[in-house]
Image 1 (cartoon, rainbow, N blue to C red):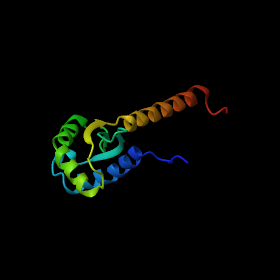
Image 2: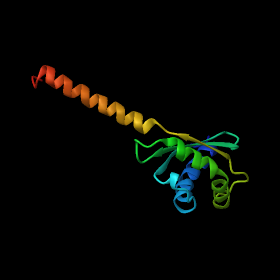
Image 3: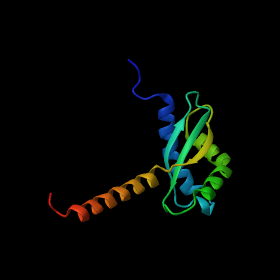
Image 4: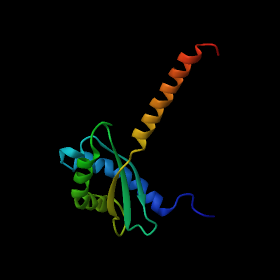
Length: 125
């Protein structure tokens, strides 16, 4: 019977939990404040991990936070290595997750379309 979750997925989920803790406790760079880890995709051979992050302030520029995370990648990998029971911690690649902003924008467009439709047709329905 095959496993329900692959090892890379389980490692990614554990890394996501631990990354949140490491960012709160150990990374002192102020550009990392307000960063939330949304997902971690780990390669099948566990050598690379893409860490998706978003910002609590949707208007903020993600570039400084991404640079700060990339600079702290060595520290973060060290902390993960001490907290996880794996032979080698994957190389971390940080990417900004735009799905939250895109979802908020789509929701806003839908609300606008509904309001426009009500204005045109009234409350006939």
